[in-house]
Image (cartoon, rainbow, N blue to C red; front, side, top):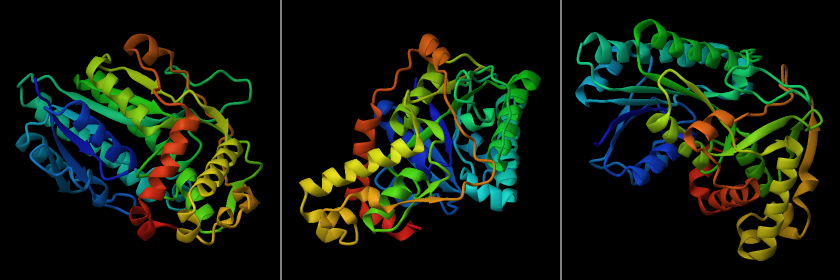
Length: 353
């Protein structure tokens, strides 16, 4: 039976990839996209998708009445909630926006879902899926076990604190009111359409333009890297097979220091320039355009406040219960990501830092 989805924040990085993934995997379904089009939300990323199956709505998730109207008028049965302020550095300098969007916005969506799906008395099957982050668990020591779904929350930045709060609200609406919810906590995503404030697109664009690659501290902060398409697959499994009220951690199986990621990126850029003479003409400021190593741009800067040292995901639950397995290796997916940015310069040029 076809489903009607409301996807919040789907003009942003992960949301855009999810909409594209879902329409390809479930062509019988319809999607309503709700996005406020703040700095990281770009309607252009959804170009070519708007038709009878995908409708774009410009709006704010903090608007309870609008949320309620959308759920009712589009007969929504599945809400996938990506909309969030997500950049740690921005949360350090301006936490108010993070509290408003991540906490108040999530609550406004939950209230609307409760009114439409529960208080209306229809008994209609539904799912409110909340997309969260592994950062709610805090930081790990070098020998600590990876984050599991039972790891105690210990957020260390305003961003992760607001995501932790939203996770708790989703859980509470299930246990208190019976709302059919699920939550996924993911590791560091990368892939096409990522706003160039994040490490991989930022460093790639800097490399192409001959600007420094600023490495926080010693560059040994460890993250689990998750290709965005694998993340979308994980969310699909949770929505369609996951148990109501449960949380599932989604990882990429690539636990790497930031410095290793940066060095791998530099090597990929060097190889692509060596194999394609046209790149030197397009990006003449890149060291690789002159046969020099991209790594020459690496510069070490003061570490940011409260920088978590290590994240790692234990994905045993989603793997054993739902059959999840990342389909892409890190080196393969990173190379595909770099090639996407090289082929889509018109997308990132207007928004580069």
